[in-house]
Length: 191
Image (cartoon, rainbow, N blue to C red; front, side, top):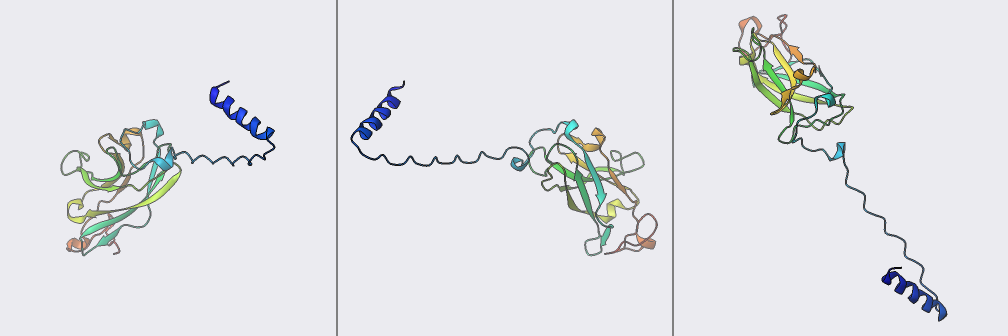
């Protein structure tokens, strides 16, 4: 038996022998909860996400709008995280919603532009969805389709992992009038 335990037992025995009442043992102090691990603890992404943990879907949450004051196309995209990894637009390898312009030879040859506009993702735990607003300047996108796709910065675009993209447009000025924006069918976009 260890010496400190033996001394404690001897002290208790001596107190009991003296006829003294022993105090009730103190209630054990509950241990502090362990820090959260997993989804709740993810606030930034600093490493590549394994491709097998990625499963996403993109859809328009509402019809595209035209902001005449800013001459911009306003989009709200609903992003579904059906994978196993938490996605968030924070950290050195963050996940963003990217908008690219797709030219006749794709987004990597002019007039296409892969790195057109980005919007950061809020925290998207597995099995959740969120709406992300993205504003695109109208003038550069005229006559070109717009592709929306998730990208892990410094790692890869999600289409490389077989994830879907969302293609829109092309957009044009309504009857050539400045300060307007029409869809591919010539219908004016609502403000």
